[in-house]
Image 1 (cartoon, helix red, strand yellow):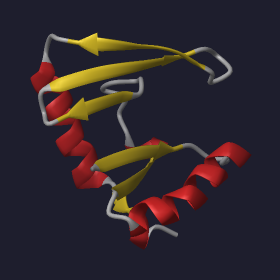
Image 2 (cartoon, rainbow, N blue to C red):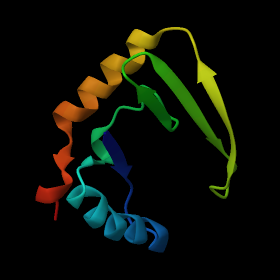
Image 3 (cartoon, helix red, strand yellow):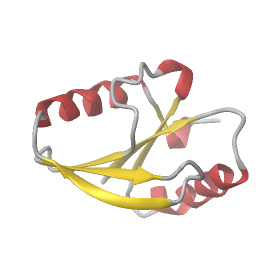
Image 4 (cartoon, helix red, strand yellow):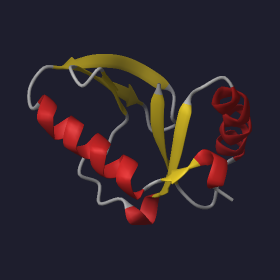
Length: 98
């Protein structure tokens, strides 16, 4: 499993908590990559999960960051694969991030 987390500065306390939790996640095999928000062009400006390059789930949150719903995206799957590949190519492995 891999994830790219786009980081915005200044970091919130919750983001700092997430990064601390990533230490354990990475030890058990999750590949985690981080990307400074300034380096991302907002091709897709919402949280999504991509499973096996076939299933896309869009996460929706309210303005306070509380989860609202999950929506399956069935069109333009290749766009999400391209974004995933781009993000992986320009992000930093969590193990190397400082």
